[in-house]
Amino acid sequence: MGLASLALVGQFVALALVGQTSALTLNRPRAVGAPEQLTALVDALPIEPDEATTLESSLVQDSDLVAFAQGKSVVSTTIASLACGAIKLALGGSLVSLSPVNKTAITVNWSQACQTEPQCAVQPVSALQVSIALLIVNFFNVPFAVRSGGHSPNPGFANVAQGGILIDLQKFKEIIVSKDKKSVKVGPGLRWGEVQAALDPYGVSVIGGRIPAVGVGGLMLGGGLHHFSNEYGLAADNVKSFEIVLASGVITTASAQQNSDLFWALKGGGPNFGIVTTYELYTVPVTAIWLEVRIFPNDQALTLIDALAIYQNSVTDVKCTAAFVVGTDVTTLGLIYSGPLTKEPACFAPFKQITGYQSALGPGNSTMNILTQALGSTFNNDPARQPLNIYANSLTPDSHDYRAVSTKIDAQMYKDVYTFWAAKAAALRVKTGAGMTFAIQPIQASLAAASKAKGGNPTGIPAVNHQWWTTVVDWQKASDDAEVLGVPIATTEKWKALAKAKKLDLDFTYMNDASRDQNPIGSYGDANIKKLKTISKKYDPQQIFQNLQNDGFLLKKV
Ligand SMILES: Cc1cc2nc3c(=O)[nH]c(=O)nc-3n(C[C@H](O)[C@H](O)[C@H](O)COP(=O)(O)OP(=O)(O)OC[C@H]3O[C@@H](n4cnc5c(N)ncnc54)[C@H](O)[C@@H]3O)c2cc1C
Ligand SMILES: *[C@@H]1O[C@H](CO)[C@@H](O)[C@H](O)[C@H]1NC(C)=O
Ligand SMILES: *[C@@H]1O[C@H](CO)[C@@H](O)[C@H](O)[C@H]1NC(C)=O
Ligand SMILES: CC(=O)N[C@H]1CO[C@H](CO)[C@@H](O)[C@@H]1O
Image 1 (cartoon, rainbow, N blue to C red):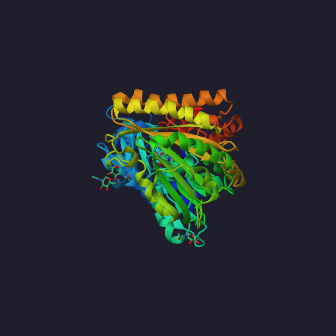
Image 2: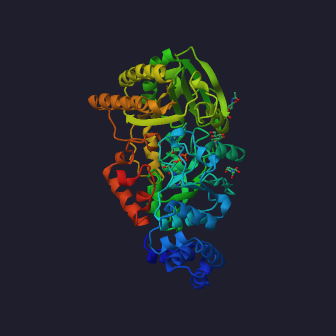
Image 3: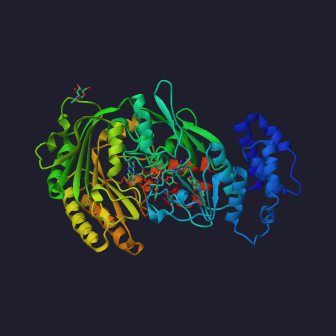
C-alpha cells in the first residue's frame, strides 16, 4: 500500500473508529528523527495521539526499521521480524510471541501438518488490535495467516512459516446473548461446544458446528452445515451481522442493511474479504430434541446404505436429519429430530428393519448441548489425545485431511463407491495405520430454499435432495502423505465418474469439507464467482487478502 493512501486510510480509520481524536492525531507532536513514512504508518493506526507519539519514539530507535521505512535495503534482519517488532511495540508484549514462538499458540491446532512456526504469533483481543496488526502487516508487505479454531487440515490455510505472521484469534471468546434471546454475538476464537454450552441455560441454540472442538471463525465463512440446516439453512444463513476488519484497517459491519453485498459474500465466500472479529447470530428456539445414535458393525454398511437412499428419497419433514458414518471399526447412524417427541418420527421408518445395533445415545428426548458434547468423542481432535471410538485401534494420529464431493441419490452408486473405498481404506490401514471415515451427509432441497428465504448466499447449493460425501483421514508419517492422500482423491474420482455415467453428478463442492487441492468456490457457478470477485475488489482494492494471505480457498485461485 502506498504511504499517501495509508495516511488517508489513517484519517478514515480514525474518523470511523475514534471520531473525535482524528484531528488531534494528525497534529500530534512527532518523535525526533521519525521519517515521514513512519509517521504516516503510525498516524494510520487507530490509536490515541499520545500513544502514537510514544509508539513512534520506540519505533525510531530501530535503525533497520527506519531504513526500511525510507525505502532503503535492510540487511541485518528480516522484514518479517521488523514487522513483528513493530506489532509488539504497538500492541504490547504479552499479545505477540516472537521466535521461538509460544508453542501453545501454534499447537492449538488439530493437524500436525498445519503446525509451522511463524515469525511471530499475534493474539489480538479486540478488533482495534486486529486493525493495527493488519495495517502493520500491509506496511511491511509480509505474508500472514488468520486462525480461529485451527481445524482446517489444509496446510498453510491457517498457519504460516518463518517470514510470515500468524494472526491468531483464539482470545476472541466473547458470548453476548441479546435481551430478547433472539440473537447472540460470538467471538471467532470460540469452539462450538463452548457456544452451545453457554446457550443451553437460555433455552436457545444456534445453527453452527456439530463437533464441539471446531472453531467458530472458519466454519462460518465456509457456510456451516448443522444438524438442522434442512430447516434453517447453513450456519452462515443465520448470521445477523459480521463485524469485520477490512484490508484498509477499517472496522465495519456487514448485514442485510449495511454493506449488504459484503454480507452476502461472507456467507460461504471463505477467507477472501477481511478478518471477521464478531459473528452476530440469530438463535433458534431449539434445545430439546429427539435422537437416537445407533452403532452397527461395519458388515451392516451396505444394508444401511440401501435404507439411507430410501430415506433420502422419501423424507419431507425438514426437522429430520440422518447422519451416516462408516469408521474403521463401526458404522454410526445418527437420527435426529429438531424437537422433543413421544415416539420415533415417521421419517426414520426406512431404518426400522435393520437390527443388531447398540444405542450410544437415546432413543428419546435429549438436548442440543448433550448431543454436541457427546459428539466430541466422535473425532480425534487432538494429536496428543487418546484415540477414541472410531479410531479405537489406531496409532496416535498426527495429520489429517478431509475431502468433499456432492452427487444426487442412488443406492447402487453409493454401494459401488463404498465397496471401492472400503477395500482401499482397509489396505491403507494395514500398510500405514491410517484411519479413514466414509460419511454420507443427506441434504434436502429445503436447505437451498431456507438459504434463499434468508437473503441468499454465494454457494449455489443445488435445490434438490442430494448428498455431500466426506471423509476424515488421520495418519502419522509424513512419508505416507502421498499414499494416504491418494485414497480420498481416488474415492472422489470414483464418485464423479459413476455419477457422471448415471447423470447424477452435481458441481457443488462444500468448502468446509474440501481438501487443499480442491476448488470449492469454483463450484459456486459463474455468476456467483463473478460477483464475489467484484466484491473482493471493492472491499480490498489492493487485494491484500489475495496476495499477502499465505493460502486458503482464495478467489485468485478460482
Ligand atoms: C472433526 C471436524 C468436524 C467438523 N464438523 C463440521 C460441521 O459440523 N459442519 C461444518 O460446516 N464444518 C465442519 N467441519 C469443517 C470446519 O468447518 C472447517 O474445518 C473450518 O475451517 C474450521 O474452522 P476453524 O475456525 O476451526 O478453522 P481455522 O483452521 O482456524 O480456519 C479455517 C480457514 O478460515 C480462515 N479463518 C478462520 N477464522 C477467520 C476469521 N475470523 N476471519 C477470516 N478468516 C478466518 C482461516 O484463515 C482458514 O483459511 C469439521 C471439521 C472437522 C475437522
Ligand atoms: C503461551 O501461551 C499460553 C496461551 O496463550 C499462555 O497461557 C502462556 O502463559 C504462554 N507462555 C509464555 C511463556 O508466554
Ligand atoms: C419427550 O418430550 C415430549 C414433549 O415435551 C413429552 O411429551 C414426552 O413425554 C417426552 N418423553 C420422555 C420419554 O420424556
Ligand atoms: C483448545 C484445544 O483443543 N487445545 C488443545 C490443542 O492441543 C494441545 C496438545 O497438542 C492440547 O493440550 C490442547 O488442550
